[in-house]
Image 1 (cartoon, one colour):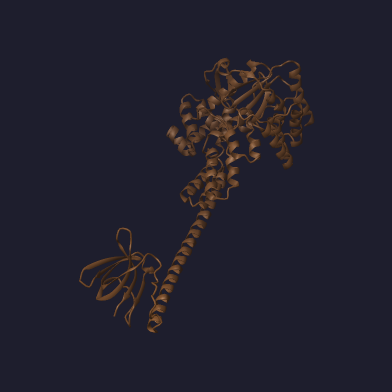
Image 2: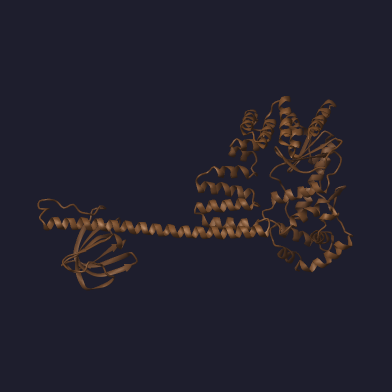
Length: 554
C-alpha cells in the first residue's frame, strides 16, 4: 500500500515537473481529468457518453444520470496500473485508466449497474439486472458506430444472457427486444414483459437459446451511436489546482486503501496547501479510523475554508449535522433526509423527511419500511400501506419480499389491535365521565330536596345545578319522544295546547327526575298516557331549545 501511495504522488509530481497541463472536461454525470492532452480527455469522455446513450436508449431511459458524479482520470500510462474499477470516494465515483486505452468489460458492467440503481424505480426480476449489465458491458466503439453482443467471460454466459443476446442481435427481433428490456426496466415481471414485446411466452424462446448458447457462435449487432463532435460537445478547461492536490488521495479512497494510508495522502495535500477538499477527505478517513473528535475538527476546518459557490463538500457538511446544506449541495442524495429524520421526535415530521428520502432512493426496501412505520405512528394509514407495498415491489429477492410481506401483516395486525384498544379506552372514559356528571347532578338535586323538606332553605336562594348557559323552564305535557341513537326530540304541549318541540343532543347528559312513586325514565315513542313534565332547557344559537333536565310532575 505504501508503494502505491508513493506511485500516485510520483506521477502527479512528475507531471508538474514536466510542465504537463492537467485539463478537465465534462458531460452529463461524467468528469474527465487528464494530463495527456485535450484529445485524449475528449476520447475518454466520448466513449463514456456513447455507452450512456446506447444503454439508455435501448432500455427506454433517456439522459441517464447518477446521484454522484463519475470521475475518470485518463492519465499517461503508468507501470503497474491496475485495471479500472468504479470506487466511491470523497465526492463520488472515481476511476483511472491509461489515456488512449479503453476500459474492460468489468468497468462497463459496474457502470451499467450504477445507471440502473440511480435511474430505475423498480427492480428487474431475478438476476436480470446483472444479465443486462453483462450484455452491454462488451460494447465496442469504432468510427461513431457501436457494436453490441460480443460474449463476456465464459462464467457470465448464462442461459438468460444467451436468450437476451440472441434476441437483441437478430435483426428480426431487435426492435421488440428493446420493448422487452424497457418493460423489464419498468418493473414488469418476466412473463408480462415477453407477452407485451412478442405476444408469446418466454418459455417458447428458451429451447432455441439453449442451442444457441451450446453452439457458441454468437452474432453481434452494429448500430449508429449518438451523433457527437467531441471538439464542440466537450470543451476543455484547466483543472483546478485544489482538485489536483487531492486527486491521489481520492483515488486511494476509491480503491479501498486502508484508512491510515488515505489519511496520510490527504494530510500531504494539506501540507502542500490547506483547502476544503483535503480537509473533507481527511475527516472521512479519520471517521473510518474511529477518530470522531479529530474528524469533526477536520470538517470544521473544511467549513471555514469553503467557497459556497465553488466547493460542494456535501459529505463533510452531512457529518457536521448540516443536513439542509448537504441536501442543497447534492439534491439527488437521500442521506441528508435520512439523517434528519433520525433525530426527529415527532412522527409527522419524521414521515415527511423519510418520504423525501424514499423518493430519491426508491429501490431501497429498508427505507420504505422505515417510512411505513413512521407514517403509521403519524396515523397516516393509507400512505403507510403504499409504503409497505413499495418495499415489497423493490425487494432484492423472493425471500426478502416474503419477509417484508410478513412484517407488513404483523405491523397491520398490531396497528388494528392498538386502534381497537384505543377506541375501547376512549369509550370507557366517555362513559365514566357521563356517569360522573349524572351522579353529581343527582346528588345536588337530592341535597337541595333534602334541605327544602327540612326547611333548611327558608329565606335562601337555591342555586341552580346547571353549569352551562342559563337554563329556562317549560311546564306542560310530554306527548312523544322521537329517539335517534343518543339524540332525541321531545314533542310537548303547553298549558294552552300548543305543540312545542325540544331537542336532546345527548340523552346521557340529560338529568331525569320524578315526583312521588312515578317511574323516572324517558321511553321512546308515543307516551301513553301523556305525562306532565317540567323541562329545563337552554336556547342555542339560532333559537333552538336544547333539553338539559326533565322532571316528571305528579
